[in-house]
Image 1 (cartoon, rainbow, N blue to C red):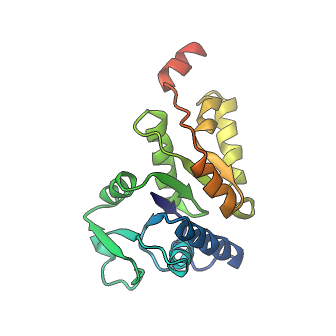
Image 2 (cartoon, rainbow, N blue to C red; image 1 turned 90 degrees about the horizontal axis):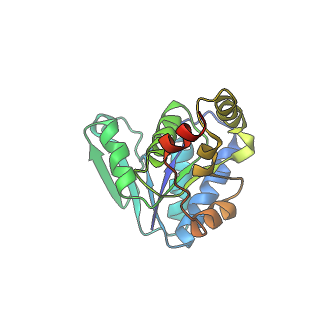
Image 3 (cartoon, rainbow, N blue to C red; image 1 turned 90 degrees about the vertical axis):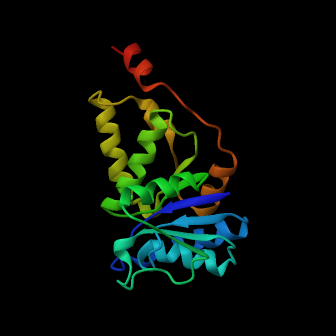
Length: 194
């Protein structure tokens, strides 16, 4: 099983985020799972991949667009480095080669990846587990935003069942191992609520 991990590439973040991300990477490796990530050596991408390396992960797949070549930002220890032409192709490759998705704290790129996976799941394009690793309450404001969208009827509460929120590496592993798909027809749900 390969776990796709999304997360920040920033080095200017509190150490707690890096420590927890590295711990998660090590846990993935000890489970015998592979890691699929954005190939960056900095921030939480770097931390989770270093953790996987520390845990003797046999399959660390970094996926990155060609335009990152030569910029000195890629992790050299990937067992496989996949180059794509575009960011869209990168996301597609990561989706196709992963059996679960875990979102660590991050910026706009991390949100882009996460919301695309949620959207695809909502539309029935995949049934894979999506885990939000809410380190230090980082995602609490995002949950407020989602609940506001539900309150204002821009989406239904069922969207919140499409992902699982965890606060530790062990909870993330348990959520993946005990996952049961919860799919629904977005348009059927909307028609029932009108």
